[in-house]
Image (tube, rainbow, N blue to C red; front, side, top):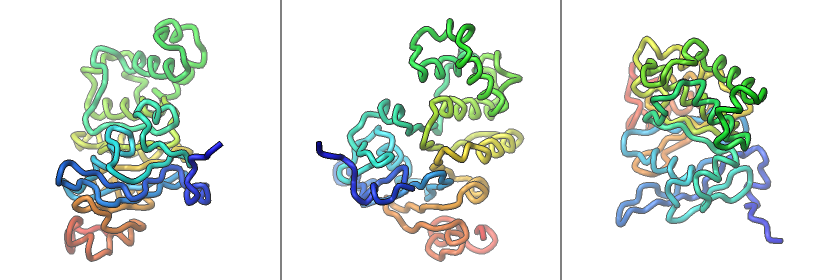
Length: 264
C-alpha cells in the first residue's frame, strides 16, 4: 500500500501541521507565493502581516476553503491538501472566524450541547443527550467554566456581550477537541473593558492544543506567541522568536513601525 506520508514530515514527528510551498493564484494575482509554515506540537505560533498580506488566503488553504494552485498541506503527517473542510475538522484541524458565526436564538449551553453531541456521534438527538448523557453534561459544564460562560449559560446568544460571544466561539472550537486550533483575530471588535478576560482565556488554552494565531493586536501577539511568521504581499518575509521579530529591521519597516511603536 502506498503511503501518503511526506518523508520530511514523517522525519519530524514534532510537526503537527505543515504547509509546503503554497501558491494561490486568482487569475493573474498571486495571493500566496511559495509560502511554507510548520506548526510544532504545543505551538503558540502567530501569523502576522499588514492588511492584504495574504493571511486569510493562507488560512483558507489550511482549512480547505481554498485549494492551493500548487503546494502541499499535511496534518499529523497525512496529506490533506484536497480534503474538504469538515473532514479536516474531524481529523483535528479547527478554526474560529474573524466574524462571529453563532446561533443567536440559542443559549451557550444549548450551543455547546449541540456541538458536543455531534462530536460524540449523537447527531440530532442533542436535546435528549443534554439531560440523559452524562458525558455531554460533564463536557458542557467544563467548557462553560473554562470559558467563563457559566453565568450566561442560559442567556440567548444574541444578547451576550461581544466578548462573551468571542469566548463562546472559542469554546465551540475546543468542544471539537482539536489537535490544531486556528484563531482568526479573536479580539477583533471586542471592547477594551472585555478584552482582559478573553486574553487571559486565550493564554490559558490547553498545552496539548497547537495554536496558530492570526491577529493584528500586537499586545496579544507578543504576550501569547513563542514563534512568529510574517507575511508581506503574499510572501513569507521572515520567521522567528518574538524578540527576533521585534528587532528585525525589515519587519519594523513594513509592519511594526519604528522607535517607540515597535515591540522589543
